[in-house]
Length: 254
Length: 218
Ligand code: HEM
Ligand code: SF4
Ligand code: SF4
Ligand code: FES
Image 1 (cartoon, each protein chain N blue to C red):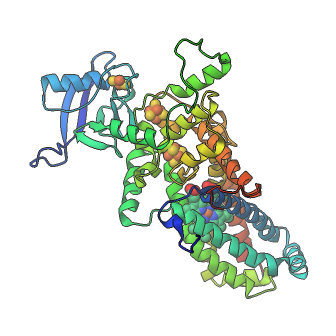
Image 2 (cartoon, rainbow over the protein chains, first blue to last red):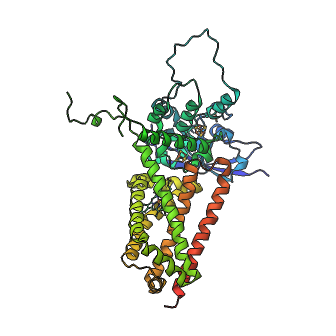
Image 3 (cartoon, rainbow over the protein chains, first blue to last red):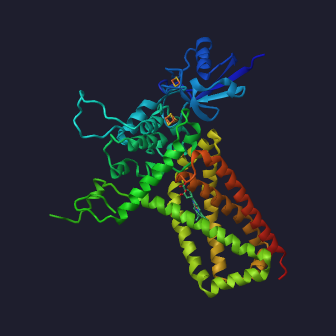
């Protein structure tokens, strides 16, 4: 006999002045290979057409279906109900602006954060569209790609105690992203320039090493290792600066 | 023309202060860990006999290591506290956020951080009281320590302080290892288990030591 699943789902529509935050309960029979994404669609089709949630790719690529599943941020499309108990509680991701019910606006946050850390290749050379693309060692390309697999789902940010407490903390996502540019020889930024964007208490030195990001990332990015490498790297940039003779005209203090 | 107006009020120049403070936070933490381990060895020496402890204590006082080292440790603790306290949420709103967050996430490492922040407050007060009491009552002897513990008040005092310190030290040790990347993803589980056992063993040695002091004939 298949299980009866009970879904407790957070409901609130900030646009509607009469809406109060509460949870609604829906019961659904478990079917083979049921994911939360399919379950939510069923509930919306059969029980409550007003239920709000996001999805697009339904294959863990677009990063839009992040939500808190029984306390843990994860992707609805990647979560099979067989991994969960009979009672399933779904909440929207914290930190991000709530659109309604399970839908949050991760886009604005990621855009702002990407701007803050200057998340693009910095290169002052004129782009020549006819030139042959520069070559890169395969191993290096692979290790950059490993970090590039981030789908900006926001689970790491939502699970991070620091990000929850401090609005200006850039989160594991951004620190991983900077690591990716540090590896990339096409980015001409030097260590002090990277330091300027992440060598702060809003960046790597704000991270308290709670490692929730590492434990929830649905793409299993090596966040713990990257955060460690980045902390050491930035800490040594700071240390080197103490022993460097002061350059004239440089604005850096201390 | 140069003037004495501090332009940094209006345009924040890049600074490296965050990096220095993070180094200091880690190094004071690591220094205190090393001290606490040595401290445990010194105090637990009473289990080998009151004479052993007395001899060691005498050595540290005769060389003035206790008189100089004690205040240095206290100062290190103070610096460490000021640095680490930057991470503890100060407003009741943020405290509520991290509390609800930890309850929602049921994630061990997040709870461990909360334990670290809470034990820190207890250590700040009880640790200071303990340092003051010991350093203003030199020399350290097994008989005096035993008398204190047997008085009851200090016995209970140490029974509380011991697990607080060991938890804070154990978690801090683990945290430094993962934050600074000494322990990689592949080694995290194993290191965590090692750290739990290590903390357990220290609490056990501490308990045995307190019992020994409680039963030491004076
Ligand atoms: C005076 C009272 C103390 C307070 C208020 C305090 C507070 C804290 C806090 C809040 C943290 C977390 C910092 C973070 O997540 O970055 C921390 C970390 C730590 N504490 Fe303490 N602590 C105190 C005393 C001690 C003592 C006595 C020791 C050692 C015997 C110690 C060892 C450590 C270590 C090793 C860390 C990890 C450092 C790091 O993450 O960089 N603390 N402390
Ligand atoms: S690092 Fe992982 S959890 Fe964070 S946004 Fe990227 S894919 Fe999502
Ligand atoms: S290690 Fe912890 S504090 Fe640092 S980014 Fe990850 S979840 Fe946040
Ligand atoms: S729907 Fe695209 S990641 Fe889940």
